[in-house]
Length: 186
Image (cartoon, rainbow, N blue to C red; front, side, top):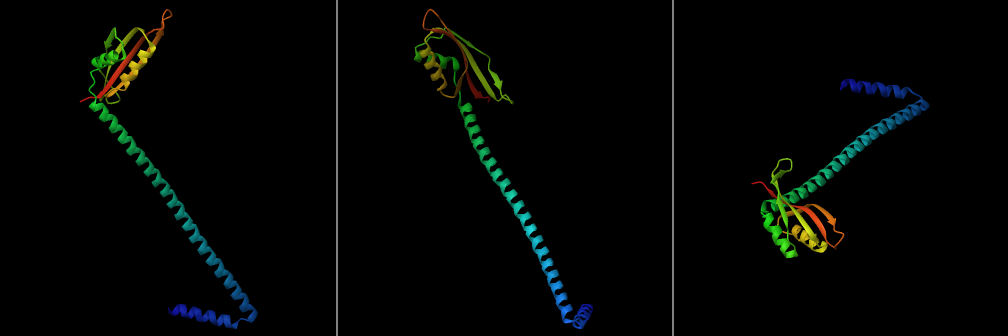
């Protein structure tokens, strides 16, 4: 503390020995130096604050992205659970179901060939049961009504494939189709 007082006394003595013109120049130079130092300090604080703001904005953007992904994950999970519930509750006897729907549509199924049950998906937890159907001399409207009613039924029942061949002599056609139902393996 004594050294600082000594330095200040020396500086005051030196300053008092200066002429008035030299004093003004030293004060102007000191003022300019203080203004420059103040500018540097304010500029560095401003740059630092801008850096903090940018990092905060980036983190907020990432947070919004995470929230968006979480919401879409929740929606996908709810949808997956709904499909799993549909597959778990599905116990459609495909042959009987198809015969009922065909009778309702005014059709007879002359050829119905069941295929072996097959596990599908990466883990094989979903079982597909399918039946190949052949219709000869069938009316297009009746076939459409039949296939639509099959897909509107309980559980998950889908028409996997359909091949149509028109008959030239009549307004009917021959149709080959595969109908499948899906359920969760228990």
